[in-house]
Image 1 (tube, protein in one colour):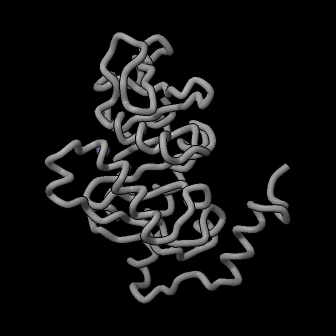
Image 2: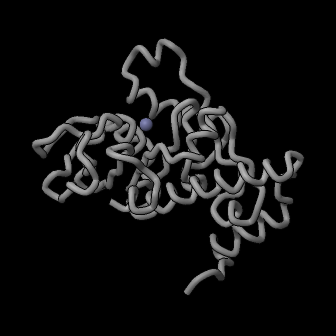
Length: 217
Ligand SMILES: [Zn+2]
């Protein structure tokens, strides 16, 4: 319900899930139900193969993408998908979001990756299931860690984000939208803008992450 409140979704767009690793299931938003009408009873409980195990409503149409990511990425417990405007515009442009500033470096040390559109065979097959592999294959190809980079743009589609909790995944969905908007404006003001230099990337990332972090309480 934070997604519309944060201006990240319209109508019934988007979805969120939260996993219970011990029971190997996740709770996900029901398909097509307005956010204001959501309640715990309306959540659908699904296993990591995408089978509904509890609930009366149909799960989000993107459920299989969530299931694939939970099954293979063992340290995530929350996933969010939105069509937030600026992040989606970068996804539609098939462009990574360049790391232009310290706001970006506070969250990740690389460009936000954009996975290229899947081939026709994958699209005609089990599309939502394949979207999970499209994301994972892209991380493998680029040598990225899903624990360090908690967001991706699915080419021609929109962002997916994740985290150790559903709350962190929601936070990351707002972060990727802000980074996308800032990068867009940066290029409007200066089309020749350069990426952040390594020393500033390292400084800002390490202030918030790792053994030497000193940000926050
Ligand atoms: Zn979508």
